[in-house]
Figure 1: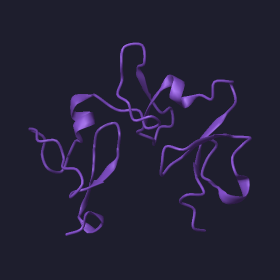
Figure 2 (figure 1 turned 180 degrees about the vertical axis):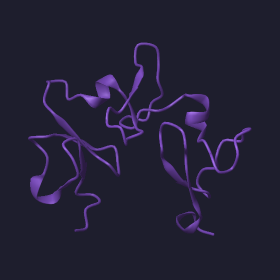
Figure 3 (figure 1 turned 60 degrees about the vertical axis):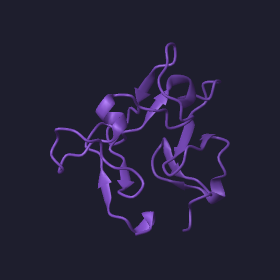
Figure 4 (figure 1 turned 135 degrees about the vertical axis):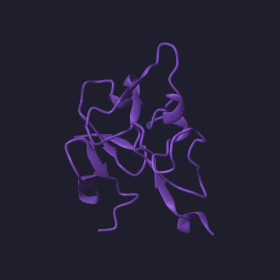
Length: 122
């Protein structure tokens, strides 16, 4: 079965991400199948959703402050470096300064999240 058609599962850990079963299996554990954990949540070793690197000494990860979001970021990856508000695509790691985003091609979901031109099919 192609990965795109494989059944999906959702991690019950802090990341709350969903995966195709053919792409990533839940972490083998003592947990019941109805409460699957991904390997990152199972080991508490998350990766930055912006740059993809894991937490490191001097570069800790923080969980997104939005309650329904389970993404983790390095503090430096979540800021623009010049105190200007940033917006993040929910489907990929691209981010823009709020004032620099391509307004005509972006769908706004909240103050911090958008669907960028790569994914917006209106």
